[in-house]
Image (cartoon, rainbow, N blue to C red; front, side, top):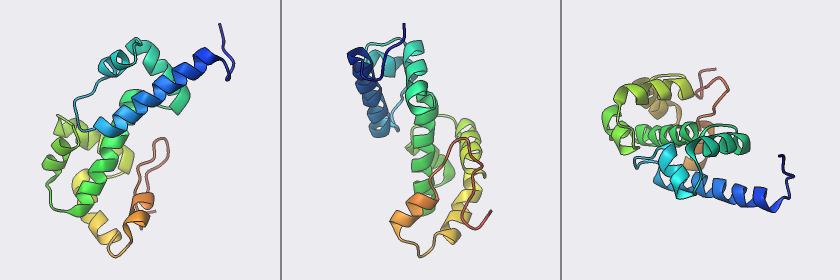
Length: 147
């Protein structure tokens, strides 16, 4: 059974999906999994994953990891925390998984990014740094000056 975009059931579901996305944005550093997110909006994990992907173009887990990597990038640019400290600060429990996902999204390992980011963004306003360094899924990651 398909629903039209204006269908009240579909609109309610979109509201729930937005709540999930907002929760991920707020609580990215906490332990979150798809089952817990789904329970929070009374959906099954499978249904949430399918509907979230349909609405936002990626799975809830992928969205969560992108938020974590985005925050990690900001912390690494600051330069006062080690890669391991940043990993745990953004809610990742495995340095290996964090480094792998970081490299996939950003195009370089976090240790290299930490050095390069300080050099490449020196003197730029924070609002510009945020735009030019935001991780973008499904597109070749390009670091300012490397591309």
